[in-house]
Length: 199
Ligand SMILES: N[C@@H](CCC(=O)N[C@@H](CS)C(=O)NCC(=O)O)C(=O)O
Image (cartoon, rainbow, N blue to C red; front, side, top):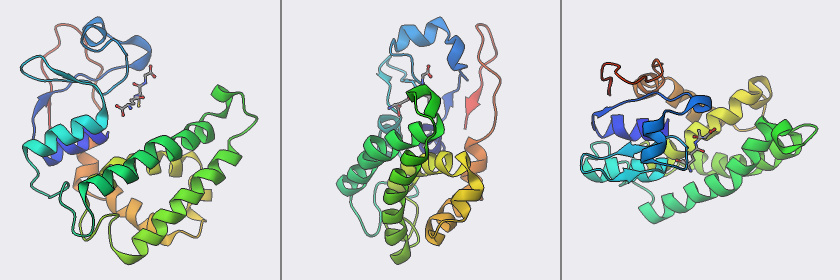
């Protein structure tokens, strides 16, 4: 989802192949044996296998909304916030959402540990509309998909927490044209299928 956000924002059209994770097609595994999505294959055959790397590649080509140039932060600071999200928040999110996969009776302890970091975002969002300044930028777009997953694990609980700015920030994004564009559903790719372009 975050890769699609950056591809769409940068106006980078690519051929999209929707993958069903329990049945990964052979050409995908040939290009990227680690078997996770997203995978971006460039025209020269180079493969980019991490969503954040895809975002940076697309935005370095074209960044009309200044996602790499926020008003109140810098790229290194955004990357540092994103790293905390990936290393800490995502760790707790996975265990909150899928406790059975981790042999846990429930995910509540991880829900509450992740909430501590969201309260830090709440403080940042109290001073400015977006995480890094006046307009959405890389940090917002790389973090929001995870916050959305967290919110939707128990939406009623999430909406009852004392983080009005986080709620506003998430709702504004969910109401945006860009969100609608990346949420469009595609049929899974099959050999011989007609090319699907995104965006
Ligand atoms: N750090 C990677 C993580 C990618 C990742 O874990 N993707 C999941 C889907 S969101 C996946 O492909 N899992 C493989 C599977 O479930 O078989 C990135 O952001 O690109």
